[in-house]
Length: 214
Image (cartoon, rainbow, N blue to C red):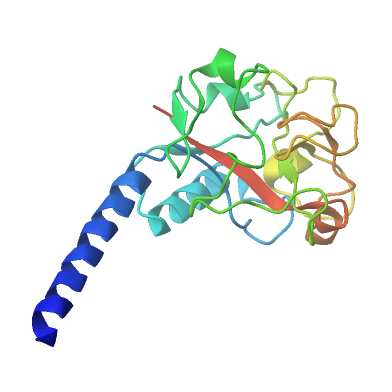
């Protein structure tokens, strides 16, 4: 009598697993659940993209062109975060469309915030008021998603440096806190430094946004 029940249970579990995998495969946006662990040294844009791809693969959403939402400002050819991530729309791990296109993403109409800027596993990331606070998200970008071209370093040497000097522009994924633009998801303020301890000390953890360049 127990065997049919067991078979039904396994079948139901398989159906549930298939549904979860289907949901994961539709994901085209997430906030990293963890950073590489070396402060703002992400291995440059290539290393950051690889970190996005690794986390996506672990969540069942591999095989896509995952890009980190990061700008660079060094040299004669700055890179804009907004130019790296395709044209949208972008969907999180729970099936919520967080933005329809680039203009929507960089407007007040986007659906970004603590509830929807979730990890590759569909989990909320700690924000202001949580312990520890992890709401500072590395972007190196201005409010419109472009690189800052004022001659200062806003990217911790283009994501290759993790010392105590320097700074990187960071947004607040929970859309609250301090800084020049406290409710901005991509440019709330600069970090205290570029080391892991500096990032943690100011409410971050070396996290960044990942998008599929669709």
